Length: 125
Image 1 (tube, rainbow, N blue to C red):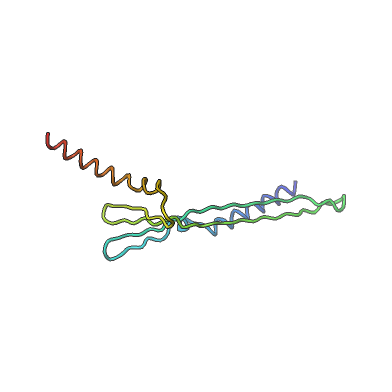
Image 2 (spheres, rainbow, N blue to C red):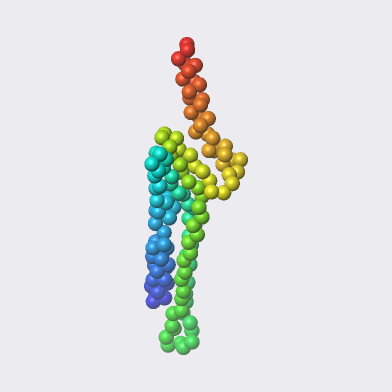
C-alpha cells in the first residue's frame, strides 16, 4: 500500500531530524581543562520524541490522496558538572541537591575513608 511507504518516509524524516540535533556532545559536553590540573565536564539530560501519522482522504473513490505529517522534539536539561582533580572525581549538580543526591555523592568518600581505616587496622596486627 502506498500510504505505508509514505508514513515510513515521514518517520525516517523525523528520525533524521533528531539525529541531526543530537550527538554525544549534547549529553557529555566539551572537556574544559585548567592550568591548575582541574578538568570540568558538563553533563546534560536529553529527552526526545517524535510522531508521524497519515491516512488516505476519501474525496473521490477512484484515487485516495495521502495526507500526513511528522514532527520531532528535543529537550536538553543541564544536570551538573563532573569535576576531576587528581584522582578525585565529583559531580556538582546544577540544581540544589536533594539529601539523596548528597548521600550518593558521599559514598566514594566514605568508602575511601573506610578502606584507609581497615588498612591501618590490618597493619597494626
